[in-house]
Image 1: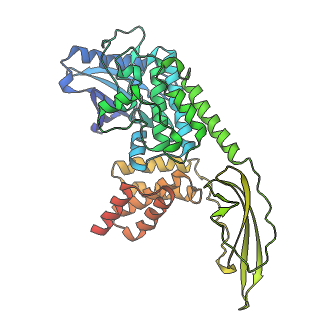
Image 2 (image 1 turned 90 degrees about the vertical axis):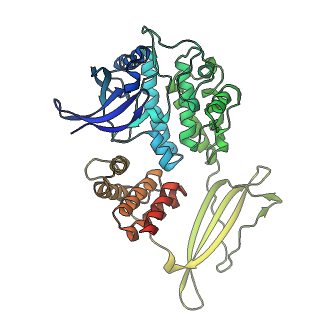
Length: 448
């Protein structure tokens, strides 16, 4: 196939092309024409290839196949990944599900730790340089501003390389960078993936870079439904002093997992309490005050019992008796019982679990495949894959179920099947909340 321009990356343009010798699709990064006459830039572009070549075979690193020059323009041939980037995910869906985030950080962290072992510092770790493979795993790409031990540096002290939103304080000051610089940026990426926002997001790059140098690390627990146990982990990951940060990316991700585990154990400290019997037909509301203390939103334990009772009209109702443990504003656990009554006919059997994969491909991977096809405008091909993904993910309540519903709905919209599309878009919003992409899809239906 003819090379197809698919984006801009660092100092060059990126094309999708076919390796005719080996019969595989590849990505080709070509130094921008305007930069080809600048020997310093040419040298830095070549250094990218040399730095990345050192990492050949390392886990979760984009593989470099070849380096060369065409009509005076250097190029790098690398593996082509169809899943887009984590920046695409953030732009399309906002904050990501914590389980996925931890897996992605594990993978990106493994690549960075391997690079550091080879003397390579990336210096531009950000969601746009974290690419998704077809199976949903992450690959670290674009060592375009990397520094590598043993290679001549083409930058001078006082020169800032990187992206303002992810700059470590020492990097923003133009000081020498170390592996700790990448670890700081990985902390910023983790913060953004979990909350949907960068920690020091500002109106201008200058203001954002200055905040990295001077502002305290904000509490991640205040930016979303995240536990307070994560806050000290992020304070260490983004410490102003590089010596105070985690010694490796693996240590950082392990600390995040442990904080999540500890927070989960804390919320399960109080076991469900059996509900006392309540006379039939006497439901009562949960009061706003218990023992003089306001209820918090934290649910600590739940016990549930149900019984069939008669109705005056001869029918049956189901009374659900729920014992809820809550904390008062003073922090003391208290037990409250809630009874609700509903006609028996309205009680539904639980939905059966989604069928297991029949071809070894997970719902998550199928969703990523559909997303990639949609990004290329191939909605007819994307729709059946998105439907297969949703068949596996339906009822899980996970982030990827929301993505799969969006993919089905958006594909149907683009195929002029709006009546079928709207329930899927509604389900996506029910799971993940409002999003501009969903609004845009609905608007297309109204126009048509």
